[in-house]
Amino acid sequence: MDFTAIDINDPLIQKVLLSAGVVVITYLIGFGIVRFINSKVEDFKRRHQARRITYYSVFFIILIFILLIWLDRPSTLTTYLGVLSAGLALALHQVLLNIAGWILILLRRPFGLGDRIEWNQVQGDVIDIRVFYTTLLEVGNWVEADQSTGRLVHIPNSNIFNASLFNYTRGFGCIWNEIKFLVTFESDWEKAKEIILETGYEQSEEEIEARAKKRIYEMSKNYMIKYGKFTPITYVDIKGSGVQITLRYLTTVRMRRVLENNISESILKKFSQEPNIEFAYQTSRIYRRSEEGSHLEHKKEI
Image 1 (cartoon, rainbow, N blue to C red):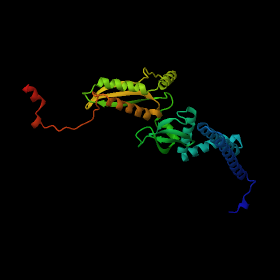
Image 2 (cartoon, rainbow, N blue to C red):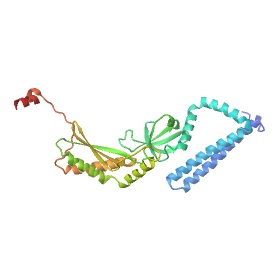
Image 3 (cartoon, rainbow, N blue to C red):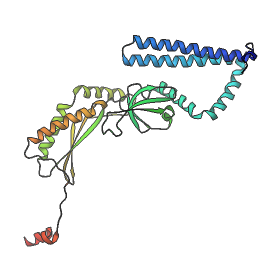
Image 4 (spheres, one colour):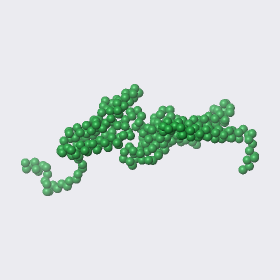
């Protein structure tokens, strides 16, 4: 290619060169600011937020300067934007949806960095929010608890318009968890219920309950929401294999497995000291009527 044939006085060439210069210079300045932030800001969350602000600022500065360079006459703005919008709507439909989703996330803030969410059937902690996608550190999946799998999942921001979003951190700030215990019909189920409820109170944290009450009061100003009880509670149900006792208690999303482990260990130790309490489990029994007869036949004999 003969570069000597390029006329640098051509307005189009000047705009291209000027645009490239703006992109390079702004990017280098942003890169320098990010390096400074990484070396000076020690707090992880503040450092990440500062980097995000820098990236967004670079993006918008470049966008503004590019528009100013190419839209040298304000009268052409309407025509230019109309043609550009029509072309982009066809060619970059998904890209534009991702950008629109990103703007909605920034303005409405359905979640933020560090929140644990379930979005588009993926559960995880939000570790990055970018123009086109949001990155989650996945939890759950093949791990049978709310703990990290170690995988990073990138979800397009366009899903904010058509996929359900569950936030475990915002609003209430706590979750209700339930543990089910099954004891035999012959067991002293009332004593078992007493032990389970006592253990729930021992392991639950008053700070969590107080915080939950405060959050509910604040949420009730904007939503029709009400909870009457924040302390642990038990429920009894009759199952085919025994009496099921369910413990329901408040916890934070990141402490659910730890608290469930502590409660289960404590109840196992306490039940082992109670001769009248036994765990129930499903068993199989072969019944031969010819050998054992039927219940009705025994009643007739009596």
